[in-house]
Amino acid sequence: MEILDVLIIGAGPIGLNCALEAKKNDLNYLIIEKGTIVNSLYNYPLYMKFFSTADKLEIAEIPFISAAPKPGRQEALEYYQGIARQKDLKINLYEKVLKIYKKDEIFEIETSKSKYHSKNVIISTGFYDIPNLMHVPGENLDKVKHYYTEPYPYAKQKIVVVGSSNSSVDAALETYRKGADVTMIIRQSSISENVKYWVKPDIENRINEGSIKAHFNSELLEIKESSVIFKDENGEIKEIENDFVLAMTGYLPDFDFLRNSGIDLQRDFFNPVYNAETMESNIPNLYLAGVVCGGKDTHLWFIENSRIHAEIIVQHIISKY
Image (cartoon, rainbow, N blue to C red; front, side):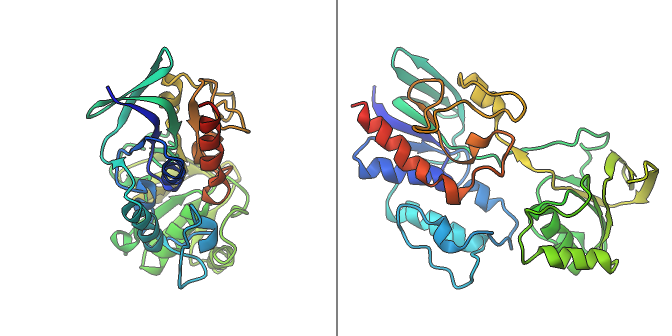
């Protein structure tokens, strides 16, 4: 029975960085990924631009060359998948981790294809897989989309975009410019301050001129086949015609998976318990890396500020030998 030094769950940028750090320190490692390499980035909108500049997205001191000031989805896919190829990282793709349990000092990891044994496990699964549901009647209709890729399917359609985050604003602007009749329903009193600074004036100007309709301090109540019902800022119940709902309400880590792995979650934001100095969870030798560390607060960690997790974790693993 082969016993790995470290098994890494998730082949996102931070998972790849953990593998590079493990390889650099001659640890026997393996990445298990349920999709493709940097699967979350693959599922981003096709024309998405990062908030960060290319140098902030680099891992393992490998230069990220971008012609534009802000790299896009395709450039990021080329960069991260290129690293995986060039460094010949050990990755099993399209294999989902189902269960982690510890027997004595060794973890047994059960997947959709096999079982593995490892002295250490790093969970770096991100948060892009589970939509943050609105829990309103009609949310299960086919017209409701929690993922947005490109604007072309929505040309000449009546679109409701829920939310005011970066993804909401991008969807609203892109579909509007391809001929959609766009209405935004927003719980807050204004467009989020976290929206990319070069995009925020664009959406605000489109709202001010009436090209995109926006209902602030409003709440979506029900989705029907050909309309939606919402409560506006005055508390009035309104119904408008609608073809598609783009529910850009965010995404969540797989909390059930974390709990079933034995990781304690704090109240409110479900932040997983870990030691900030080592990234080790409440389960010895089980580590957390990347955005999964933030629980429901998915704006807390991102590539730029969680790249350091890989070195912290691997150095702590090495210190135990």
